[in-house]
Image (cartoon, rainbow, N blue to C red):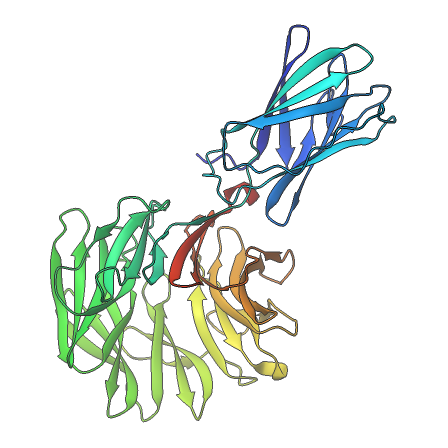
Length: 447
């Protein structure tokens, strides 16, 4: 079970040993007779922890009638970097700030076990205090590619232990999986071609991917336990799969016929392709409704896009868009209640939510930036999206209604969010640097 309440543990050694357990919520320390920010000992030291720009900072302040010096700070973890520590020439005034210490976790492995040793001297008692501080839980952003290849993430596994991704490590695009720290890289495809991937089945037992070789498109199902690769569809021309049903028995794919995109459903039980939307305009399939009864797609007419849903039999087509803008759906929540989509309504480029009937509209972003959705997660009631900041794309999340917006990346490169993990504790994105690199953001401490 994930402990969702961040905590710090302090071991204070002063003329004997006093054990203290201090809880931490949102990086605010509390302890000592429930007085927030206080650690009680013969010499009182106050702690005020706060989060700034992705780094954990701890402020040390004298409390009441104590006057202390911080003389040295040590850590055996090279991932910690500290701000400069200055020792005053005179005794600090009551309540004065002793030092601001910035602990940069960008290289920290997130195990939350590193310790920081702080030496404090009291000029009044000439005693030396050694304070061991356990690293607080926080947002950890980790590059899991760490190579010179172009790699694009596709999805987390349902059990949140693996990442499905595409890499050109061999010189061509192929399908891989790896752990959340970049370990156990495994190439899946056994055939030749340029590959793309769709995702995992809901139970995590199989993966759907596809290849393009000359004029032939081949769709595969890969059994994770056995490593068996099975061809489920092979056609001449453009046939790109986009979604797998929850039961793993159906695949939506978009087929290009005479320069027009149509939607087909591949039923693996009967090895049959069923036409879903094949009118005289472009129709692009996106995903299955939770429960696999309906398919979400959008229709494009002269660069105006409108959202629709249709049953897996190809019947009962219904429009979801309200006609107020050009709408493109990107993802649906696990509980079957929300669709997140991009729209240009009101002459803006924003992220909205609606339900599967299209009659419950919620505006998530409302700013002058260019916003593009990536995912919506009903377990945490959050929306994941990309937003343009000073010509850079950064990763953001917010509540459904746009409140509690949090910027999760601050880089000079372009960052493209992909998805949440099922629990919402991890976020997958890739960064455009000298090569496309995969990153995982661990946000479990915020949940």
